[in-house]
Length: 130
Image (cartoon, rainbow, N blue to C red; front, side, top):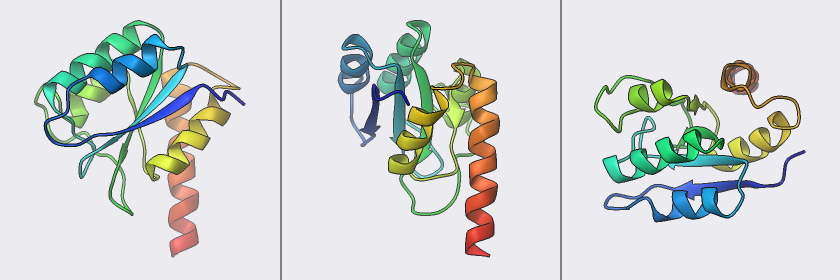
């Protein structure tokens, strides 16, 4: 279990200070709760890029109660661009994603392995709601 995982909730007009503060103060992982399907703005995307470059594993979750983050929007701060930076795209809520990332970091720091595990969590949660 890796306890140094922070959760940042994105809001319109934010800058990257909270993301940078988490990375600069020792977070090993970071969950960004983005809008709708996981988009953020350009200042936050730039801070996410810097965090990843610094070795922080970043998961992007949606603030919506159900549904996953989809890499549809290709702008510089859309989920597609975030995935291209190496972000894990979540299908579970931010608070759950934080706990899941805490557990995942105890096994791997590889984003593709963590993405695979997050995808399996989404399938399990979907089966519970079926």
